[in-house]
Image 1 (cartoon, rainbow, N blue to C red):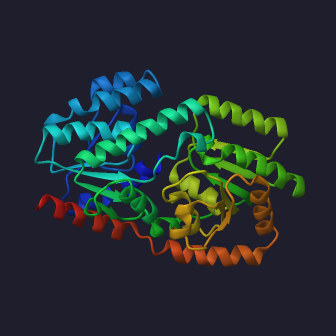
Image 2 (cartoon, rainbow, N blue to C red; image 1 turned 45 degrees about the horizontal axis):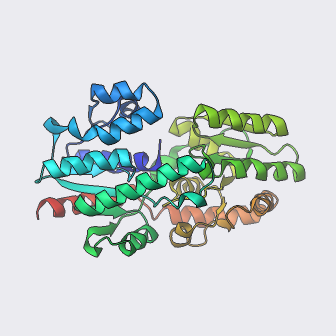
Image 3 (cartoon, helix red, strand yellow; image 1 turned 30 degrees about the vertical axis):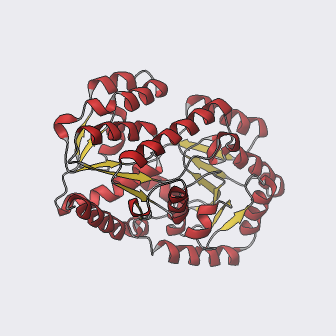
Length: 365
C-alpha cells in the first residue's frame, strides 16, 4: 500500500461518520487493498479488472486511458484524487471536463525528480518522470484544489506555475491511539525498514550499509517489511544470501504485526532517495523508535531535527549512524522521546477535519 493510499484511507474513514458518502473507483486489486480498512462503496469496472490480471503495465494503461469513461453513474460533489500518478489523474481530468458541477480535489505527495537523478532503470525512470509531468499539467489545467502534504511540495508547485489560491497545505498524520495499543514482540531486532521495496527507497543502499553494520557488529539483525515485484525481490534475496547477512524479508504484513515488529527494533533505517513527507518515519517515531534516514529536503521542514540525517547515497555514514545508536542507549532514548513528542502533533482527526472543511468550502462556491 502506497503512502497516498494510506493517507486516503485515514482521511476518508473519518469523513464517513459525519455523513460523507464515499465511493472508491478502482481496480479489483485496489478494492482488495482498501476494503479491509475503509467501509465504503466500491466500483470495479470489468474492463479494468481484465487489464489488472494482465500485469502492472496493462493495469497502468487501463486505469490511465480508460478509467474516466466508466464512472458516470456514480458521480458526486467531489472527485478526490489520492495521488498525482497518471492513472489517478487522467480519469479525474476526463470526468472533470464532462461533469462541470463536480469539483476536483487532487492530492500531491511529492514531485518525481528528473529521471537522471533516480536510482534504478533509466528507461522506467524516464517514463515515470514524463508521466508525472503530464499529470501536473492536467492538474494545473482542470483541478479546483490541490492539497500538498508539505511546504516544499507546495513551494515547488507554486514555482512551476500553479496559482497560489489553488494549492493548500494539509500534512499527513499518524494514529497515536492505535500505535499506543500495540505491544512489541518478545525479541530484539537491531534494525527495521518499512516501506515499498524498490531502488528509489534505497533498498540497495540498505543492504550495502548492513554489510558494514554486520562487519562491526556481527549477527546484527535487520527486518525488511514491504512488498516488491518478483524481479526486485529475487535480486534482493540473492544479495542477502551472497553476503550471508542476518536479514529477514517479510513481504507485506498486517498493520498490527508490522508495527509490533517495528516496536521491537532499536533503529528504524529508511534510506529512501525521494519522499514528499515520510509517513513511515512518522509512524516509527510514534512507535518510539529512533530514525536514521537520508537528508531529504522535505524532512528538514517536517521532522525538525528529530531524526538522524545522513547525505544521500553515503552508505558508510548510514551504517556509522546506525552503529552509533546501537552502541549508545542514551542517544536512542533522547531521539525516542523527541520523536514521540513530534508524532503526537500530527493527528489524523485534525487533518481529516481540515480536509472536510476545504471540500465544503469548495462545493459552496
